[in-house]
Image (cartoon, rainbow, N blue to C red; front, top):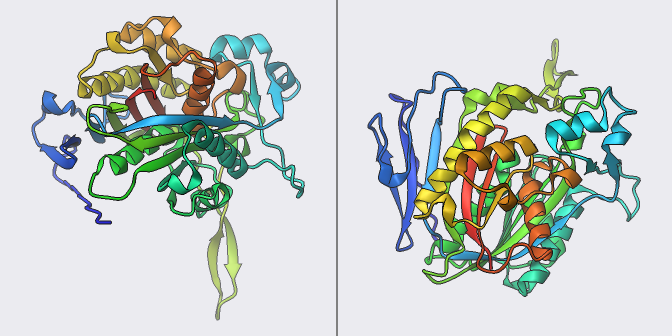
Length: 404
């Protein structure tokens, strides 16, 4: 399999952007050096002096239709459920306060392992979700060529994807992890789509998993953060298809590291003395801080950028908001979903959400919600779903999917 990598670097201007548009299965990279980017590539350029500046983006990529389609979806969540009422005993809060401000009523949480076969882990949830998606797809494990696990909280720091593939029996697949926090599943889906779109390789079927256990990194004494997060996993099977039968109709992705301070889970290693000759050397023992979030800034970021990135993805697909059947956003806060729908002119009854039951499951949230909607018969074959993810990095992106 031949891989071609394009690296574009510019040190002289932070107003440049990169656009990706597949054309007859040949990637074409367009470099925009003007202050105003070409509308044909749906690329914008703005001042990067502040992460809160309108439509700021240090990096951007758009994609048109990709020759692949989703054919299976699955999910899994821990058995243990913690309600808002339960949290009234943990921090100073109330069910009414949480539900009215976030839309969350409960969340599923992984418990500490006991060492027996009943233990649930983020890896076991990933395997269960992927197995459910594979069953729906009608494919066998031998049919899978690629597995991407999007997670920021793997069981193994070196990555869970290869062991997930092994557990599924996907012996022909190559597998790797992708880290992009709450944007991870969406970025992983577009990445898998690029592999499947390329007719020059052998990748015909892929599984994309989104899974996170951010309960492990939450400060359970911080009532503004601990109420938000739950654990869970979702997975989707994509298969290559002929041009014209596309299931990824368009997409757009961004990141802006200037917003890093508003949402992060930073390394905070403690000192460890290694007694080499002389005074020895002090290295760092691996540890991470609790998840930190500036909720006000993240809310402003999401309500500003998500409508725009959805419009970019719709433009790359040659569509408008009137053409979509469903709006599926990262399940972070019901207020964000309502604002985005209002700004796009999408009726609220088109919003897919299960936030009340699961909370914010980071990379797991979009496939968890989609799985429920498909299995309940809400989403049907041929329905167009406008998806958007957003979160730490800061990163955000959108993909327009046609189901089935």
